[in-house]
Every structure is written in structure tokens, then in C-alpha cells.
Amino acid sequence: MRDTVLIALYAFAGAAVTGLAGAAALRLLRRRSLTASLTVVAAVGVVAMLAGTLAVAWAMFLSPHDLTVVTTVVAMAAVVSLATALLLGRRVVARSRELAAAARSFGDSGDFAVPDGPATAELDALSRELAATSARLAESRDRERALETSRRELVAWISHDLRTPLAGLRAMSEALEDGVAADPHRYLRQIRTEVERLDGMVGDLFELSRIHAGTLPLTCSRISLYDLVGDALAGADPLARELGVRLVGDRVAAVPVEVDGKEMSRVLGNLLVNAIRRTPADGTVAVAAESSPEGVVVSVTDGCGGIPEEDLPRVFDTGWRGTHARTPPAGAGLGLAIVRGIVEAHQGRATVRNIPGGCRFEVLLPTAR
Image (tube, rainbow, N blue to C red):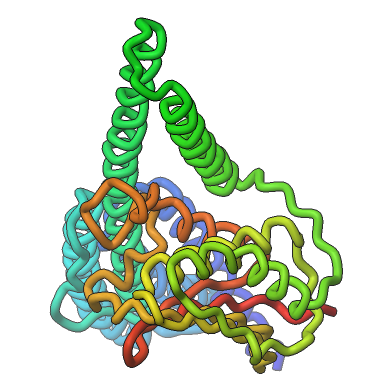
């Protein structure tokens, strides 16, 4: 029993010295190739066995013949172990280089392509994460390009929208100043109309800037959706009568919601005005509100004839009007963008879809607690 304990102690001592030397070597080689580290690990295992064997032989627990046999076996194991470590290291390093080259490609605004061939579980997991990251970056670049295009269009459109009425205001003011206006009162009324339109456009731009900056102040309170829709219908009724459009709001449930009454009235007003202007005379605009498993759904259905499928994703974009006309009733193209911004500020969602004969705008709001 005593001899067994001594053999274990001598073997442990020899292996411990080798392990410490291997740890020091790994620390020195920590910035080198993985192949070198794997070689050191394989060498530590073999040399630790040899060191333990020599320590036991030095303590005269092994005969010279047994020592020769064990040393020969350990040497053969060392050759095989080192060769295996070199092959494994070269394969892992090659795979890592392929992965680095692929990662470099999507870092240069390209797409990440997973290298072919087998890989370790860790490298395979890393490849999947890089592929997912590449997909997210591609989506982000697409959104950025779309936003940049939308900004450029908005600047161009707003510049046109401002230039035209300003030119008219300048001409009318000069005519009044020079006393050549045939009907000064008509000119004054026209000036007032244009100023009110410009004031509304500037107000929409200011509202949109607060929405995009995330600084839109909301004062939420518990309000009946029935009252909100009723007020919006009353406000839009004169425009509907003028254009010969019938308003229907008989499917509105008295569901409580926690919203900013002023901002939500603006949402409903924008949707109703948009629907009324694009519904032909003798058409119908219907408003409905009901509870759903996701929350409260408010819908505005018009008779515009539908929106082209390719334009549906752009309906709520800033500056989109669905027409190239830059005059009323096309508007400034800010109303639906403001609708989406206000609804999302309430943790809701605004969507649109085509139905037979028209389209339906839906606003989903969280149910009041």
C-alpha cells in the first residue's frame, strides 16, 4: 500500500511540473495560432506521462527493461498525439480563416455566406450568429435607404408646396400694393386661405418633427371610444356634406381606452378627412370600433377603389400621397405619417388593407387597464 502511495506521489510530482511548464508555454503562445496551442496541449499530456514514469523509475520502482518499454510506448503515443493535434489545429485554423473572410465581406456592405464544409460546434454557432447579424444589417440598410429616399422626397415636395402658394401670395400682395387688384376683397380672402393652408402645413411639420424626435407629449386619460369617434364624425361631417359623402358610425362600441384625447382626435380626423376626399360623391365612409384579443380596433373604411398593392407598404410614409399631384385634395402627404406616429406613441399599430371597392385603415390600441 505504501509503495502505491509513493508511486502516485512521484507520478503526480512529475506531471505537475510538466503541467506548470505547459501553462507557461500556453501563456506565451496566447497570441499565436490555435495550432501551436493544440500542439502544446497534446505535448503536455504525453510529456506529463513520461515525466511521471521517469520519476517513478528514478525512485527505483521500475526496472531498466520496463522503463525502456514504457518510454517507447510513450514516444509512439507522442508522435501520434502531436500529428493529430497539428491536423486538428490546421483544420480549425483554416475554418476560422474562411469565417473571417466571410465576415469581412458582409462588413463591407455585403452579404454573409456561411463557408462550406464541416466545422466545430462553436464555429458553426458563430457562423449562424454572423448570418443572422448579416440579415439584420441588410434590413437596417434597406430601412435607412428607404428613410433617406423618403426624406429627400419630403424636402422636394415641401419645397414645391411652399413655393407655389408663396409665389401667389407675393403676386396678390403686389397687386394690392400697386392698387391694380380688380377685387381687393377677393384677393384678401384668397390670401387668408393660403395663409391658413401654410399654417396647417407648418403645424403638421412641427408635429411630425416631435414624433420623429420622440418628444411628443402625451397626457393620457380614460376616455370612451364612443365619444372620441362621435366627436371626430361631427368634425368631419361638414366636409362630407360638401363632397356628397355619407358618414356611417353605427358600429362603435363604448369601449374605454387610455389615450391622449387631443392627439387621438387628430388621428381619427386625419383618417376621416383622407377617406372622405378619396371617396367619390354618393359614396360611404364607415367608422367602426370593437374589442379584439389584441386590444381595441378602430377602423375607417372608404370607397376609394383600392390602393395598388405595390403602394400599400408606403401608405404611412412621410410625404406619400398616392398621386403625383401637389395640389389639394392631395394634401401635403403628412397626415397618415402623423397618424402612424401618434398611434405608435400610444403603443399601438396602424395598418391598411384593400377591401372590395375601397380600403380599410385600422388602428389598434391597447385595452384600458
